[in-house]
Figure (cartoon, rainbow, N blue to C red):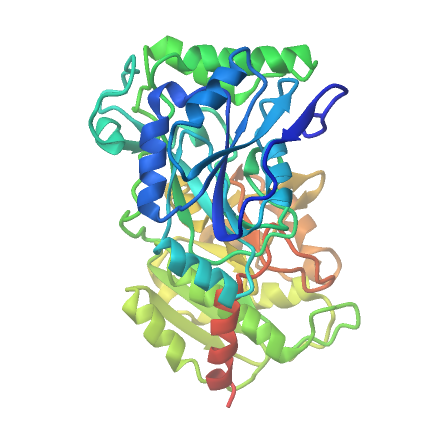
Length: 488
């Protein structure tokens, strides 16, 4: 496997006795980035980086490359070299982090220019105050206005030469565009630095500007492909998709690729959050009402930041809740919030049936629902991290689901039309006998799959198992304080 070093491959550490700093930047290189290095250093120095740690790949000019890096300033240190070519930089990154005295490490590639939601020192303060161990970002490609691949870089600002932001790596290359931007020393990064084991992050996300599409980029992509072939790891990869697109279009054809714009206008969609503050099933791990309330509030806070027109929150516990603070939150975000509370009279541990009754209650009693032909349903204790991407991609579609197995549909998050729900799912007799996931499989025949697989933040109520992400520490703390007002 790529993340295991083979015989003869090893990381040689060159410096271990550097003095302590709060943070350092680690980057591995196999060349000088086709002229990117000065732009890279300038960008991160402006962010506040005080120490750069370089690891150098085993390439024919390794010694020359190390000498050139040594001329880049007193804040630049060559701390590791690779024996045996291994293009996955995270191998050296993890080795360097284990042996250098810093609490935090920025971990970009040489063609990645990070942008944080706040100043770097404030970012570190926020991470530490909330008990987090990393900040995540989204990789966004920067290209020329016409998509042409220039031979090299000009003297102008790098972002001015490549002013157009597109999701090329995400949509054309089918690449995982999550990136760990900043990580605590003891957090081990996974392959590609797309994630990490036991990551605990903030709700705020950064952007990783990807400045790659210039010069001899095709040759670089071929080197990676040939290495994979030599290791018998070759299959159709993101590099193949990229080369095919570049060759067919003589560059990057922006038509058909989504442009990145963090300020897109809201769509006319409605999200339904189902809630059961009180559960009595002996099989449930997460039964504490206050813990469940915090989980619901965590999701509500985050969904208030989505590009949605309305949100309906419906709880079946019959509890009296003071949710005025939530109404004010959604009002400031220009999102309609409707709260429906009722007492479920059915005594059962069949939570698929109980959730089905919540949806029926909404369709019978909601004023906001009258404005919409379809709705998104999300299990209320969960948040969908890429909800905005889903809203944009599925705006013209109905009856959309996520993972599909034989006889089973994932019902944590889906989109369905009111007409299909009323015609195919209204009768609840089957829900008393079968799992809701199986009923949706049988009865919703005309369906499609989400173009973006929902990234689920939260834990399973029956097992406590973390889904794709655990709850965000900073939002959790905020929800804890809010819970004191909701239940007085």
